[in-house]
Image (cartoon, rainbow, N blue to C red; front, side, top):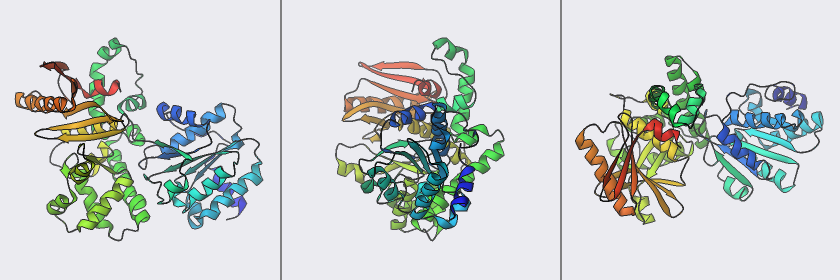
Length: 438
């Protein structure tokens, strides 16, 4: 690829001669990345496709320019640009870097974003080489896979990278994208109670992909979400892992999308599916989809690692809106959607999350280090006495087991309250109140 052609392609993506609209800032991620700017380590920005990784990386570059870094000292490369399609190997990285140096001759530190770097096999060796030569560069890499799509990644960059995991919008971010200014004052929450309840209901239905939140047409939202689903399967699973039978892969993905929040072993999945797929294929396909962030598995808590690995696991979807767009269902699945949304929030808060099942089941056991920090059950509506008793008795059992004195029930409908028994306290709170405080 000629140097002039490289620069012409890069001009479309960079701030060198123009400003670029980078959307609504996601301050939590930007603040975290800003701390990493002072280090030499490579920053990897991972997360499901379309969750906002590229936008956040552009927001980082825009912030640097605002802080008086010369525009020419920023370099953004999008490897999904069709013009790079026939040149996707490590030599392209060398050619891009040389063309950039020849045309701009930057002085001082250069900030480089390699967007969707997994398209380049061996990109990590190039990045490590820049790191080890102590070039005056700060490298950011985005990718739509837990391994950044390279089995060698961990060993090649050990001790040389810092990771930022980006997820679809949290409820607080959703409110900001909808133009609501948050205020920690209790009076503000009381005055906006109806709006917050309505917003929470909408969030639980359409999820948190940024473009979906900003799209008003419901049919268009569904079409976009269905396309996201297909793109994740085709680009991040089929292309990466050379899957030959995409139809069976898609059937398994649809099965999980329809049956999320349920507990399964791969053997059980094989028995209950209405299409033929070998146990080995179920195992491999499931892990491929998990690596691409489409689904995740929640392990059952056990102090025995062996028991934990052998137990059934619960399956969850990366985003509620995707379930509503592609899953075959007979009802609105409000309880499942609530539970799924709570887990996505908890994964941003705790090192480890499990479910607990002895005589009764606790939806979420939250752990930091060696300490169990919180027990949570999720139920859309506990107006029925039997439902309330079931949720409370499970939490009471869990509190005694883990020697905790407090726990929480998160609800979709109903009023907040506190339930105490034998010195143990259960706080019942609505999803929007819980999510606002996190």
